[in-house]
Structure formats: C-alpha cells, structure tokens
Length: 75
Image 1: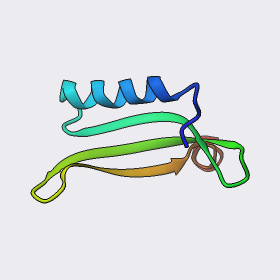
Image 2 (image 1 turned 120 degrees about the horizontal axis):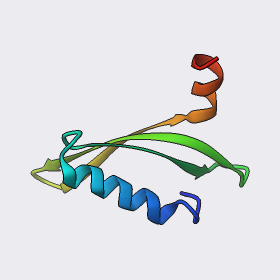
Image 3 (image 1 turned 90 degrees about the horizontal axis):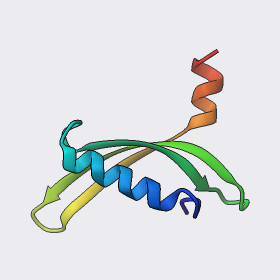
C-alpha cells in the first residue's frame, strides 16, 4: 500500500523516531499511499507503538490526507 519508492525511507524513519525516544513512542511521517483506483495519495501518518499483554508490540496509526489538510488549513 505504501508507494514502493517510499517504503524503505518510511520504515527507517518510523523506527528511528521510536528508538530515539524523542517523541515518546510516537512517529510522524509523510508518504504516498495507494488508493482504491490505483493512484497514490500523499498522507501524514501519526503512529504510536504500545506493548500489549496479549499481542506484543502494537501500532496505532492515524492516517490523514495531506492534500486535504494543505488545501483547507494552509492557505
């Protein structure tokens, strides 16, 4: 689902942010994500990793449409 050209950079950025502890257990990254029609949309990913007693490490992720945010909030 992540654009192939963005995948390595996205994974590295997420783990670097989490391992550095600068943002607690949160990560923030922008990348291109595949949508239903086969095109890609630029998104902002706000993630958090937590430890679950039953499932181990679990990521919670909020994905926001970058173009929508830019067009509505950054005139």
